[in-house]
Image (tube, rainbow, N blue to C red):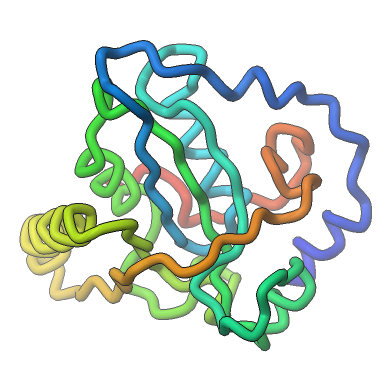
Length: 203
């Protein structure tokens, strides 16, 4: 946490054009869909999804944004400092807009499980607190059922043999608040930024 706060204070000016990490719908799908994940530091989570599904390569992800969700409704416009304190109960989260004609919701959920540790409650690596919880925020009943199905499959295949239990929360999404602009694409703008060690391919 301290390292991340120092990194923010010592930030270099952004040199990345956000348009490089966005694209438009190209399949026959009628409209984009959205998935929202929380899995520790949102800088690293955004980075690993964009590295493996770069919009420029037409692999399904159209656009990402980091922000805050899942918190106390009394805090309608949280900022990084208040969320980091744990007082608002928001999670650092990643919103992904994707082309369902190129990649499915289920594939993105499985990848989410591949790139963090879903068995540690309210922590990823050295980042500890409710803002770092593992969560899938669903937008409708179809997403909720799909997330539950993928979770059961991943638990049985990947974690039960090691006697570990997925503690990821699956819940309806509440209000969403975009994080401050300097947090968007942070690790692409700041090559020396802190990366979470659990955000890597685990299988």
